[in-house]
Length: 194
Length: 100
Image (cartoon, rainbow over all chains, first blue to last red; front, side, top):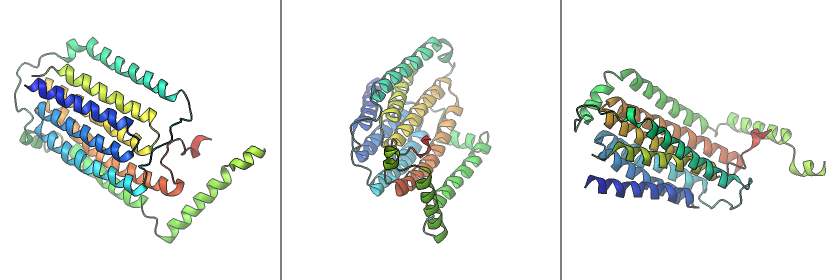
């Protein structure tokens, strides 16, 4: 029974990832990524990690995907990118290197599977119950937990600073940057005449 | 119980797809989504190993990875919006000012 659920979820996750890669529309990509994240959340549940199941759904499927969708719609970037690549052999090379990476990962895993898959002895069904994770977070992992709050604050401040462009000095600085870029980078027409 | 190697193989597959997305796609937003896919596949492997070794540390690490990923997405998307305002494009091939 569990195996059936696993295989269905795995197929959904892989289909979501492939569809995300292939869809031309960025909004469709984001929605397929949502499908993939939800499938991975179900896999967390199968791995007896209910806390991470909830976190995955709330943070990834909830917050991050919504952020992506907002930005895609804000930029109007959902239009298709042109078919041709600037480098013609980029796509086949990427495919080959991806397959190589996959083969390498599988080889290393099965080469060392003897030590990796050593039996832990006793297997408890709910070793990762949410209350145990909470106790661990606030005892053994208290310092990293507090540092995480600093990271989130830094991200918050960074985003606000990046978007603070409505002040006069910000606009002037932008104009300066643009002027510098146009003087440093030669105009394409000039480059051709030379 | 499902063998742990199934989860690890699925995780490797998803990671490879994320790498392919970064290498092939040129819309910066989709490249960013592919990075998220890679983070998620690594999370899956971590949870699988945590379950196998009955070690809570793996799941705690996944919790931190998710937190940092959320911060990273916020900053990264803000950077993308700023780049789009000045360059009017999200194509990574067009953003080549540093190319020399």
